Image (cartoon, rainbow, N blue to C red; front, side, top):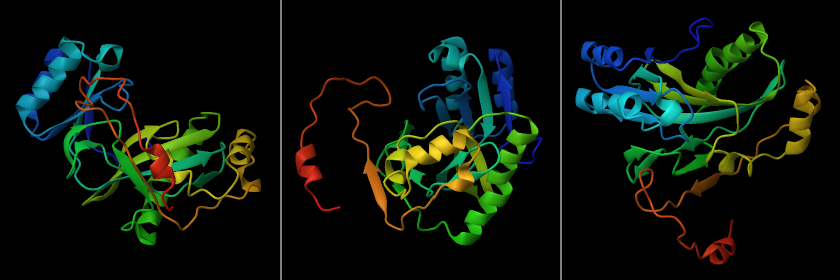
Length: 250
């Protein structure tokens, strides 16, 4: 991202517990502490105080709470603003975009509580206008895909852009090489083409040959989670009422 001038927050990565703690002493909170490996969407701590950040680093590097995923931690600049997700299908030379969506990561109402793997999403985003969409495309999406080509990384698939709209403009929070959950639950019902055909043709660098259109309708999903999530929680609770929900209009 630095090499291809793709806007993101400042960051440093650490394997050593003492070096990470020294970095926290030199910085100014709030901090974002991330496990560098895959942690099912739960390896991110937004720390308002230095003490919270110290504790997050301890849990990863000393206590080993996240196993292999937390053996390396990233300490990031705290970025402020609304988040959004944009998913692209990339075939190695061309790309198409699904409708943008917004995921809500905090566990509780009012955007409060710990970060989760996602508590629900909706699409489209009413405040995402054409000018901002173009800025994201020109400053983030195209430089990313151009960088993939320049680095001679081959292959095709879905690239997930997790973005934050800061006072300085859009910045990348994360990339994923997959569909995102729960965002996929709101963007696929809005996709009007043949998903199999799109993915099949993308594998042959032939994305330009397929129809790719997003509906102007709206879609939302709400995640119901067991009490205690994303911490320890009980499993096996019965879910009921789906037949009544399915009978509703829309």
